[in-house]
Length: 245
Image (cartoon, rainbow, N blue to C red; front, top):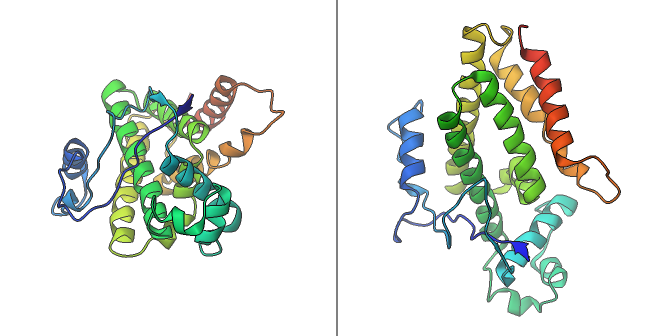
């Protein structure tokens, strides 16, 4: 049995939008309330829940997306060909197009799916915790958990998203910026309450995010440290550097 989720897609708003709650949350918290988030639409085969993923057999498309993430990571998006991808999933190149139309479609689905995971995750954290310290700890764990569950998150949130084509690149940047602004707001709130040291908020945000970017490398054969130990160690290191006492 494997994890499976239907990936988030950017569409032309001709289909029913199942992204209303997230769009409303973004608009309510956005620095630019005039931005129309309706250009980003989502369809899911199952209700998305960041704390509990449905366990079913992977579909062929999911296997293609997973293989593409590995190739994008190892070779880079520009150097990965559709032929490379077909070979990775044991398909003829012509058969591959029955499941996916282009590299851009793959990259788009990976990037926007992960955007939804992080934005839904921070929304749940904001609702579940009131203390900035508890929120930060939960956000660190969110990044670790997503990295452990699905390496496509590393592809999407490191470098390959930059190869998205317009208008999708701008849409993705807005969602990414929305997440970072909400993350930074938690840090600023903690500084204002004298829970965190008064440091440059943007530098602090970049440091925290950079500290959790390597976690996917921990998921290698022979690693004996448990996931919980990794979560505890990183949380302790980062929080100790920020807490005033």
